[in-house]
Each structure stands twice: as C-alpha cells, then as structure tokens.
Length: 189
Image (cartoon, rainbow, N blue to C red; front, side, top):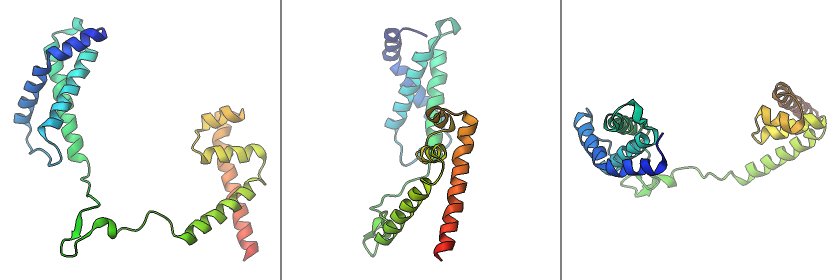
C-alpha cells in the first residue's frame, strides 16, 4: 500500500481515467439508466472506484492504469446493480387518486398507537416487571440484558457466566415469565 500523499497524487492525476472508464462502461451497459440515477451519480461511483484503486494499489503487481480500470468498472457496475435491485420508493406526498387530490400519507394509519393500546402496553410492562422480580436475580438480569439487545457473550461478561450459560439463561427466564403470565391470566379469569 502506498503512503497517503502518494494515494492522493495518484487520485488527482487519474480522474480523467475515471471519466473515460465511465463513458466506456455506459456504452457497454445493456439497459437504460434507472430513472433515479443520473451520470453525476455514476461519476461519483467511478471516482470512488478510482479511490479504491489508489488505496489498494501495489506497484509490484503491475501498471496502475490496468488495476484502476478494473476497480472503477467494478464500482460502476456494482452501483448500477444495487440501484436496479433496490425497490423504488414512493413519496408520501404522491397522489394515490389524482381526482381526489389526497396524498398517500392521508390514507396511512398513524404510527402512534391508540391511547387504549398505550395503556394496555403500560399495564403489560408493569405486569412483566412485577413477574421479573419473582425470578432469581441472575436470571432476571439476564432477561433484562437480553431484552436490551445484548449478545450472549456480552451478557456473560456482565454477569460473570459462560457464553453458553448466558445463551440459555435469558431463554429459560423468558419461558418462566410466559408460564407465570399464563398462570396469572388463568387465575384472573
């Protein structure tokens, strides 16, 4: 790998090469460009490919121009393929029925839960907290960490247990919680 100042010098000296490879690549591309992409986007991809080539070029392995052409072409075609496979997004301001004049966002449900759903969720959370306090301390802590998104190895480190046990403990705790919830639901019915 070259020093950073040499990488920059190579990049500035070969920007014309990136443009030439882009023009040649577009002539060979069999499909029309996606509507959401213009040549400016592809020029950015070509320059990123050039930068990749500058960063990883090893002078002992041959000419820079040969290496750079491949890297630039690869980045251009990868960018085109990503755009072609990506779903096209629809604006929330788009008119669903042009005659109505109402945008899409007026037809969508609110992301906010209804007030009764918020209350029900709070009651469930309180119930789970109460039941969680009935579990052994280490099991309850493992379940809490698991619910917060910690991995088994992170749980193991925090609780001072093996990774395997940290993998088992939250699942066992969750199963006990489900059982306790079912028992409370049956006893309240």
